Amino acid sequence: MGRMWHSLLLGKWNEIFYWLPIEELIRSRQQEYYGALGKSDRQSDSSAFVEFLLGIILDTLTGTTVVGNADEKAKETNPSVQKLLDVLGDEELSAAQIMERLDLSHRPTFRKNYLNPALALGAIEMTIPDKPRNRNQKYRKKQLGR
Image: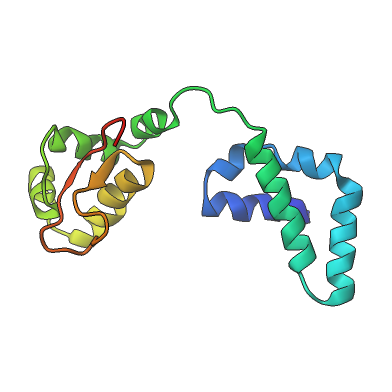
């Protein structure tokens, strides 16, 4: 039951954890799992258990092969990101210009549903990445090699 909660919490934090076979590695290293759990319990410090789980996650990520282009698949399943990409075209536009083209007026909704997901997917990039709140900030589609 604890491992199920572990998987659910990680998945809520980042969807990739729903798809990684972490449970398989924990099962294959069950003695280490219970050892880390026991050590953390005896020391009243979760560090040993957290380090073990981080090692499991690292091993899972290292041993996982990604097939296809995950960014393209994510863009296809996120209609808001696709709309943003469509209005952006090959231009560099400010957030206000993108919102205008999308016919949106509520900035927090725009950021939450369009801009932040597109940035997180790597579909777009900032023209001034070291100053994200710069008043001259614009966005463009991310090109390969950039």
